Length: 95
Image 1 (cartoon, one colour):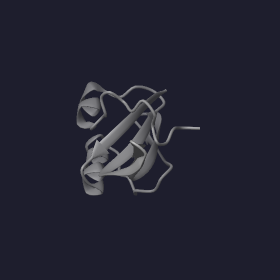
Image 2 (cartoon, helix red, strand yellow):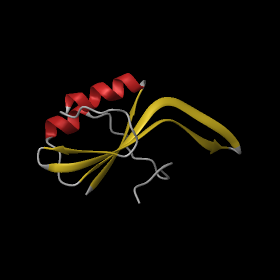
Image 3 (tube, rainbow, N blue to C red):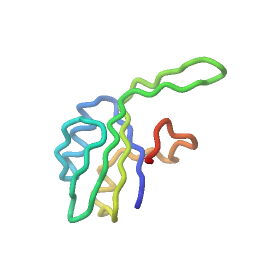
Image 4 (spheres, rainbow, N blue to C red):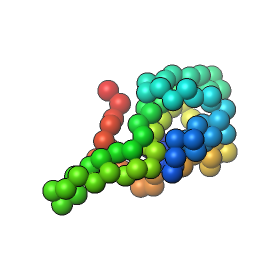
């Protein structure tokens, strides 16, 4: 299993990103899909708030998490706005 942390400027862009890899999302947190015979789980997050220097800071960009039970193709990976490096302390993780 591989986890990916994604970020786009808007929710509409995130919908387009998933469409580009062949997944029609409904924008509901916890969605599951089958993509090329493998299960993918989507954490639909939106803006995130974290503490920086004891103050709350909100990143208004759109965030989503993706868990893939197998492997994505090189083309699918290239279409995804994967955070690199991934967050050291993700706001949400898979249970």
